[in-house]
Length: 90
Image 1 (cartoon, one colour):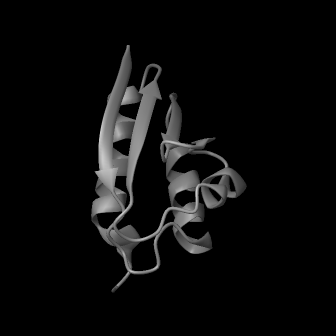
Image 2: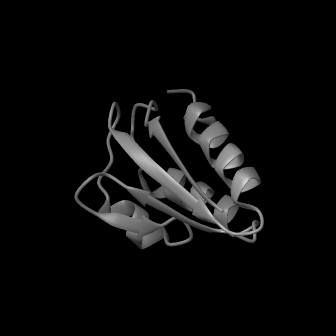
Image 3: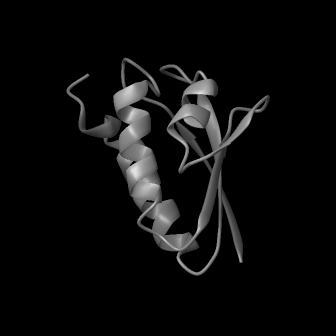
């Protein structure tokens, strides 16, 4: 089963190093292949460097795709992290 969802980066600093690391660690906890795309570039959610290369700043909408046994749980957890502003104050 392949799931797709759109989510907007809402934290002030965007998908920077600390946020990308949190996302990659979270993605690694699931038995699912999760990718993020900004329309031009696509990266594995498990790759900090790949996530940084997306250069997704505040207000940028990205597409998430998840496939695998834990696809739904991974999608829900990653969207929750992004919507929680990566647990940052800004």
